[in-house]
Length: 372
Image (tube, rainbow, N blue to C red; front, top):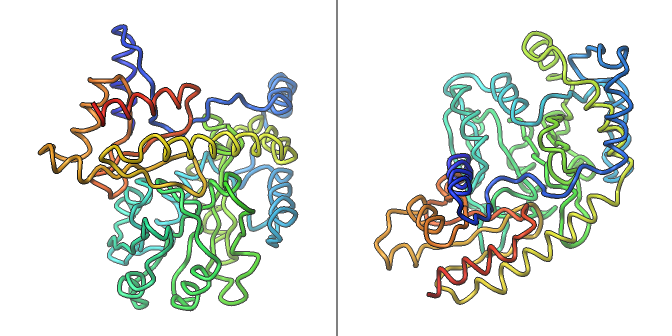
């Protein structure tokens, strides 16, 4: 992902008119009212000196209220920890919950962070499958992969990265019954305010059994448009609160308090995520319309920042060595940078990020590439 992004930047420096469909950083600006908070607080010496390893109490209270108000999911501010995005949260969670050699069960396709965090924790990695036709968990593959005696953590991602699939309540309830409180279940909800149809339903609101193993992770990077501000959070069951706090006291110390204050304001703003969602839903539809019947199969997402293009037949017909070669050829031929599916366990697919003001033009160039 980052290699292709840097190659695109190099091509642009050389004078090529490159369109990047790589990283999920929204091209929309940080909402004005949040920027105003940043501006007001950055010169406030008392505010800039606040150190709370678990996160500002005001932000933790605001997140707890937000989840209760928007999703009917109860939580206490003491259950919430703030970190610099969810990447480091996953790293810490896997380290805390998984002993070396225990299994970490991931969806496939997966977000590559999960894989690397599991490797760093010394976990044994296993997969269950997401069916790209139904966009749901293949429960048979989950039952085969889940072994209660040695599975430490199960990861659910909805809406998913890269597929943009939204898990059904029935599937989540079934997984909860299969696990039956014997492993921690992490719900990665980073795209939960970018659902194209209907309202996201948080499992904390409807699961009525085995509450003490469920973890929610989320961030302000996506629907709230603040990728580089690096503020993410987790809602933890009681047994993990103090261990996570201790880790953060000694490794994080604090997140930028000014950025945290801006996030409190962001939680009051429902219009900005709605604006982004409507825009990206339109781009998802355009992707499917333009790239169908090109020799590749666009998989229509139900939410999130990306569309997946299954290029298996294209790659095989042309004797290419997977999506890495394909992505480099596309960049060279039509100046569009994409992400190889090898990052996500889909070796013959491409991931296309909606976060580009010239997105539709980029899709038109891809159509030209595949049909020329």
